[in-house]
Length: 476
Ligand code: NAP
Image (cartoon, rainbow, N blue to C red; front, side):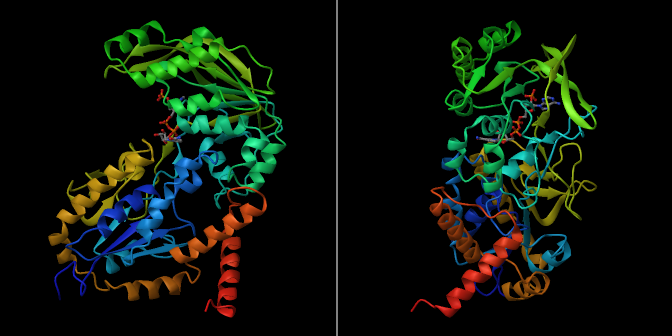
């Protein structure tokens, strides 16, 4: 057998998941000049880009334009995309091991963290992650409905996902129409009766996880005022002392914007975003199985053993009447069959990206991890680039060990034959580019950036149609 990483015996790498971390792993692998590496990327959806398509808010097109970088990676002749192919359903972990020298898990954090309070599962209480996936036309969530006939809504959490949810709820039809929001969501939000949106943070304004550009966007909405009292907008004494000891310009910028909101007179816009800090939900109350209110306890900040300021409940409680609750307290990873998983951190245990066997504490040869399932759900899209590069460096260091793996069927042809037999409707990158073009053309007709497909069946039908027309009208 020729040396691994040559034309005759390419290093075969499978990447599971086509979000940013997957593409940031594929790119440096494909750019190796002294090794021939074939990268096959899998996604259970027919569409690539992960949270760039299914998570980033529709009114943030600049952030989404990062996908152009991924298209460049995908144009490398040693890259293949197998969309609509699910690990554990269409192909097994064992089969991957027979066909690849290395497997990189880039599956992200696919569920939400839970509050663990009574009433969490009442009708009208939803994980923000579901609402986000719904308005972004994710096929698994497009069938959901949210009761937008409610006038008062609580959004729990102070991260950027909570900001996105609040902003989408507070946006006008005209603002949303200019985005690629799912068409059914645009229609539902057009008819929304939501007026008061309460954004609830368990710590203070100085500890908020949201970032300054998102905070500033609140103040620019056509149909919503920001309601915050000067007391709520200011850092409390403990936070001020901590900030004086360890200055943080990002926090100071946020405080400045909130102080400005507190001074702004309300302009009488039809919707209001109420920013409320230092409160924790203790119960979601309901009648006839439907949310009617949220019970809150007031918190104060205390230094924890690690020096960070933690929320501690006081004995003061109050109840906020709301008909809808979005819980936005973070995403969480889910285990993959046959792959180690650490329940506590909800990640795949790893050392700098090498998957670690929890029993032996040694690396599992040929298995790697990148992105949120490696480090937890934190950071912006760009955070994934150095994270993936670190993993790729370890993978490349391991090439001598990977040579010894000698997978029995390490060829593209044999893997493709297996995929075809299991999932004849797999979607290639060329197919995705056709879908992308159709979405954009449909968007143009309505003066929108694109009309997203949300149902997998519709994507497959559209692809068949356009491909059969290409066959009957070949470009000469
Ligand atoms: P996040 O940034 O980790 O924020 C989670 C929020 O939930 C925090 O405010 C946290 O408060 C709060 N929380 C956690 N447990 C809670 C509990 N039991 N009760 C009440 N509140 C609780 O998570 P995320 O908003 O899901 O965002 C995930 C990542 O994606 C972040 O890195 C985010 O920046 C990124 N993202 C970026 C953008 C963007 O760049 N535009 C958009 C969306 C998401 P504590 O601070 O007190 O723990």
